[in-house]
Each structure stands twice: as structure tokens, then as C-alpha cells.
Amino acid sequence: PSVVVVFVVAAAVKDVRLHAWQWLALTGVIWAGSLVFAALGVAIGYLATGDAVRPITMIVYFGLSMLGGLWMPTTTFPQWLRDIAEWLPTHAYAALGQSIEQSHAPHAQDLAVLAVYFVLFAGGAAWLYRKDTLKA
Image (cartoon, rainbow, N blue to C red; front, side, top):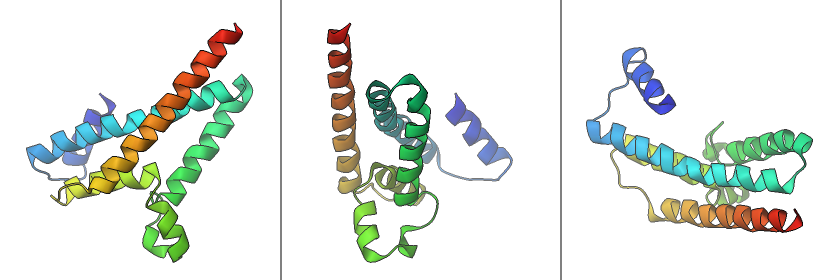
């Protein structure tokens, strides 16, 4: 529902105009891509103590956002940092949305990067969950 609210505000208040397929594709990409970061959050939740989870999560998400190019274009980065940014899930997530907005097909690399991170994060969260339940 929050994605729909943002889309309605974007269209009504900010006069954003996209084709119907773009709105639907963006909804799907936002939903599917958020699973990657939800899995990361679950993994962090099992790694850290209750009091440390929030600051660790914020640091990790802020770091990924900055390095992935969500706060500033990666073209402002030195080349070595651009090379790293291309392989971060935040960069791939944003690139998928940009491809849809520009009516281009998404790059296979971006889809692959998100899929690999999802498998790593979800697998890590599952392993940590199992490890945690064996302690109990």
C-alpha cells in the first residue's frame, strides 16, 4: 500500500507521467527488490544483540545507499569506487527502476546482482536462524 500511495502522490502532486506498464513494472521491481534488503535485515537481526541491531542496520543501509549511488550519482565517484558500486545491491536496485523509467530493458547484470545478494542474505539469515534455534 505505501508504494501505491507514493505513486498516487507522484502522479497527482508532482505530475509524474508514466505508462501503465511502467507503473506496474516499478511496483514489481520495488516489491521484489525490497526482499533483498529485508533478508539482509533479518540476517543482521540474528547477528547482533537487541540494542545493537538498529545502529548496525542503519550504518549498513546508509553505507550501501551512499556507495550504491542513491544519494549522489556514481559518476562523481573515482573510478575504483564506481567499479565497486556496480556490484552493490543498492546500485542494481536503482538501475532497475531507472531502466523502467527510461523504457529500457533491465540489464542482466543488475538482475543477477540482486538475485545473488538475495540468495546470500536469505541463506545467511536462514543459517543464522537455524544456528539460533539450536542454542535454545
